[in-house]
Length: 428
Ligand code: HEC
Ligand code: HEC
Ligand code: HEC
Ligand code: HEC
Ligand code: HEC
Image 1 (tube, rainbow, N blue to C red):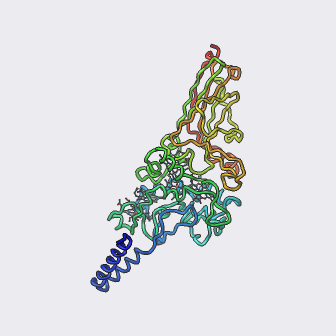
Image 2: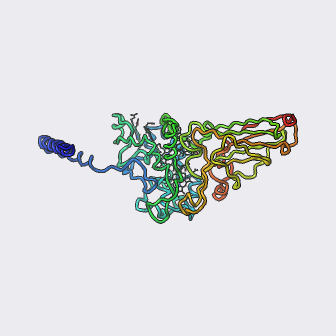
């Protein structure tokens, strides 16, 4: 007997058994059983997200609100309320970009930033109903952003990763182990460029690649933590990230070392940046985030030079630095940029366009930039000060200007370090 026919026979026996049981159990009970069987066979709404193709389908009773969840789950509510998820659709940046004529004005945006929106009738490429007045009127679904119901409710049931009798008594629950997986976050935290013509078409490289970068981290032996371990330890619904200076400060380090040399005479500087305890490239997330490293050399006592702009277009850093490569530097500040460039080629728009580099840090990487300053290019004083500063940019300067942000709102200085150097060393 082949295995398939064996399985069919077993199933038939099971079905026959059920029918006999149903008949034996009497009409009323049989009705309930049939209803339960039908219930179980009805396909349930997936817990996972579809990269913004559709809004979420909750079928929640009208009385279920975030505030109501919060009346019993007070801590989760307080943390979520202070999170980026809670302001995903009402923050200034999203508003500004969502109403842009060229790259905004699409239902797609709302499906991730305010997934409980009522526009299930629209294709992701279509303009949301009453888009401009939405931001003035602030309907509840916009205010709620990515909320309790978005992540936890499907088909009028609360998704949980463990079923308890007290939970079941409080509300209908559905066991959804998916909630505990990286794919759950990846349903929103990973996507390519959206075609403006076809509802389900994407093109180019991933503009957010948190999942893929996370899988690389795992594959390269980076550790066993998941998104949840790092971003929601102890169930922390604040889910801190690039907006948390604390998280940035603890993940990134900066070291500076200076030494004199004779042949040829001058000063060697070495500046190292490292990323620890991060499960993806740094910065990950949105492709418009980047890091800059400013190294400066001046006479001690001179005020630190004012850095006129924070997004120099002209400097390209290599994606990795060879241990023995030394750059001769005679002008200050020296600026290194660690960012992911997405040009026309990477966006899938022009295959013949030049390739742009991805120079962001890899998880666990320590990258050292080595500079040599010839003695005749040194500042004239007998005491010099060398400083290095690492900055996190939430967006580039042109975008900040375009959307009306002060640069201080979009740039965070993670570390600054400074060292005094006695000049005599140069005259040995
Ligand atoms: C961005 C998605 C997301 C949002 C928004 C969200 N949760 Fe969660 N929640 C999760 C995930 C993921 C887990 C953990 C699942 C696991 O690993 O077991 C979780 C766990 C929980 C738990 C289980 C206990 C714990 O704290 O670990 C409760 C209770 C809970 N959430 C309530 C809420 C409430 C109430 C809100 C709204 C104030 C909310 N959640 C908003 C994703 C979310
Ligand atoms: C009347 C109080 C009450 C309300 C309102 C309520 N819950 Fe619960 N919920 C509970 C209780 C009690 C448990 C069981 C707690 C436990 O087992 O630790 C629970 C369990 C949960 C769990 C699983 C916790 C775990 O430990 O894995 C999640 C997730 C959850 N609720 C989410 C929600 C969401 C989302 C809402 C709003 C739609 C909500 N709850 C509304 C009382 C409530
Ligand atoms: C329904 C879509 C959705 C899901 C699911 C989701 N997120 Fe988010 N998340 C967002 C959006 C949209 C933002 C951007 C908010 C904003 O405008 O700043 C965000 C922001 C964040 C941030 C803040 C980034 C920063 O720069 O500070 C972190 C961290 C984060 N999410 C982690 C997670 C984790 C971990 C999970 C899975 C447990 C998850 N998210 C699930 C949509 C989602
Ligand atoms: C080993 C810990 C760790 C893991 C695993 C991890 N992250 Fe992060 N994540 C961090 C740290 C630390 C930061 C802040 C440093 C930074 O800016 O990258 C961060 C930042 C972020 C940001 C803000 C953008 C940025 O990088 O500046 C987002 C969004 C994010 N993580 C999402 C995710 C998602 C989604 C997953 C799972 C697919 C995940 N993270 C896995 C530690 C982790
Ligand atoms: C598939 C889900 C998804 C879609 C679709 C989506 N986003 Fe996002 N968006 C995110 C996530 C997740 C983040 C958080 C990543 C991070 O913080 O680095 C984010 C971050 C942003 C940010 C940065 C917020 C900040 O505070 O720094 C802006 C602005 C933004 N999105 C605008 C848009 C616009 C406009 C659209 C439509 C053209 C859109 N998004 C479509 C998931 C999505």
